[in-house]
Image 1: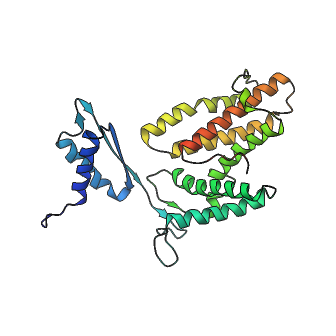
Image 2: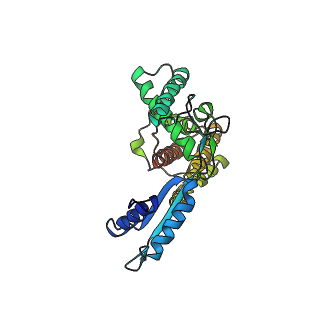
Image 3: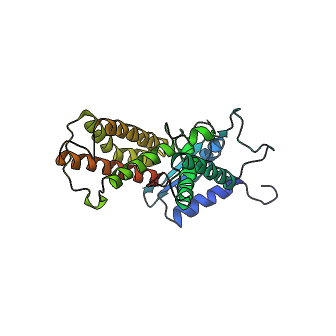
Amino acid sequence: KSDGGYNYGTFDLAGIRFRIFELEADRLIYVTDSRQSLHFSQVFEAAKSCGWANRKGNEISLEHVPFGSVLDENNKPLKTRSGENIKLSDLLSEAIDRALVVVNEKNPSLSEESKKTVARAVGIGAVKYADLSQNRNNDYVFSWNRMLSLNGNTAPYLQYAHARICSIFKKGNVSEEQFPKNEINLAHPSERALGLKLLQFPETVLCVADELRPHVLCNYLYELATVFSFFYDQCPVLSASSAVERASRLEMCFLVRSVLAKGLSVLGLESPKEM
């Protein structure tokens, strides 16, 4: 600047140089509002012109990951009633309080401590998932009712699916330590559909890591939970017709629970064993 100060571009260029040559980063990912796309496009071009994007023959990836805005029900930027920006701490506190109401309604037999633990996992998870499940380039409308719903592509729905499987093991007095050991038989169409969906998990994670679009993983986990629901409705598990069939279906349940837990963990969400 004319006064000797530095602008945003200067700071970002210095940051790029430091991360490439001091931290020896191979991939730089900047996650900001989509309105800064032009700024980072220019900064990246400047860094490349300086030769910084090639360190000892290795091409350095410079990526801008833009995201849209969070809107209220009137399609205006989400703010408090007084027009101020909402603090994340206040938002998460309200999410936990609202989730506690849902937990009290759905499972009043839980201990007070367990209710609070589950409410925290569900409430914070719901806010995170509502954001991550959207195509990051698009704006989306913030809705408490939708994000805390136990139906549809929401965190509570996936967390409930995980807890449901845990309850199957508990009801059948089945120890998870015995998995994965049993042979899996995919005789029923619902078993085959579930098996095929499970096989898609590794490629889904790789796709998300490559394209930096977490909503792809959210969609996959929702589809997995939905396919599992069909499987569970059509294929008796604990009351299967034979010991071999029971063991196979328990193995399928274990794999689904594991994938749900890993997928939610990648997204930064907890997987309650009861809800």
